[in-house]
Length: 175
Image (tube, rainbow, N blue to C red; front, side, top):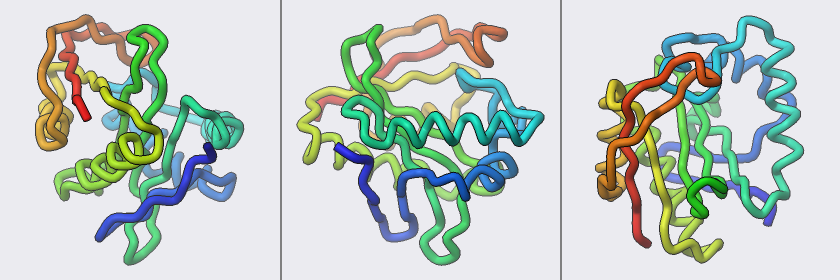
């Protein structure tokens, strides 16, 4: 199924396009603070971001990968990304997300991911979703709890392409 456009009261979630590359780079990919607890590393070159967007475009029709650009409905400003994908290691779908710093603290990612979870349940028929975060990232823990995820166990949590290892938490959401 092609990644669909989703909407909430304040947000539009849509597939990425090549026109998003500069916005992605400026909003979060070039910011080491946003990347601190992510699996990826920040980009210091727009060409890396262009390559990332191209990879995302190749996955728009995938049955196991749904990533959205998250935009403010009022201004259509790109503020982050949300994802649900099939995680081979767990044999389940997992959520992931990030926001540019200026969008932190407004509840946007919780709002966006509620809509992603609704899509996963109603359109994909998914019964369980996992989520993970570094313990040092309490904002992500708050998002998980607001979304209704239940803590499962502590786990090792690799960030920045394995350069940093943190303690993490694993959660599950039964739909």
